[in-house]
Amino acid sequence: MPTLGVNIDHVATLREARLVTYPDPVTAAALAELAGAACIVVHLREDRRHIKDRDLAILRETVQTALNMEMAATEEMVAIACRIKPDCATLVPEKREELTTEGGLDVRGNCARVEAAVKALIGAGIKVSLFIDPDREQIQASRDVGGDAVEIHTGLYCDARSAEAQEAELAKVQAAAKEAHTLGLEVKAGHGLHYGNVLPIAAIPQIKELSIGHSIVARAVLVGMVQAVRDMIFLIQQPPRAPGQR
Ligand code: PXP
Image (tube, rainbow, N blue to C red):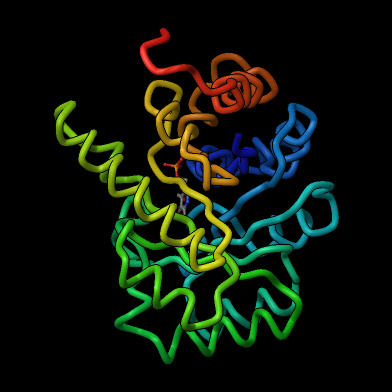
């Protein structure tokens, strides 16, 4: 059963909607941890649209579980990570105009740049995860550049418009998880997961951690962070059901 990494970027999005000091993602992180989160995830974007350098620095001091910093493989971000030393860095593609991360990192097409970032981060004692599409070549490339883990992008599974399309995307995530595990990579997954679609992904045996943000923060606005995190952990840590069992 996977553990839950809670991405608190959108607590900061709400703060930045009014350019004020609340709600504070640092408080949200503490509540998520009290509710059972195994890890706190933040994405320090180049444009600082939600999480700020200040948040990352304070979270490094206050997070009691593990801090996972999502980041582009740029010199600026690698330097920040090497100074702050999150427990894990997740390399993601980043485009200024996107609403959220779109698609996985092209590790294969950017081997040299990604490998340099991985080396620097690992040299600073930071575990490195690569956010990739469920694609064989990207998994192999992630292993080749020296990554410790992959986070399989579940966006296409989540966005599928029909049950058949969703089944097909689920099969790709399942195969990718198996492949990455066989190559000795730790396997995580995330993006677009919510209370209604998470179960089949949580049931994939090789996946050790799910990284979930928007749906948890959205529920937290209505029921509180502790309840929202507990609800998600309850779902993803259900014992597997026998075939045909409802
Ligand atoms: N994993 C990665 C690499 C991401 O970039 C994001 C979005 O920041 C997530 C997981 C969480 O996605 P969501 O907010 O849709 O749950």
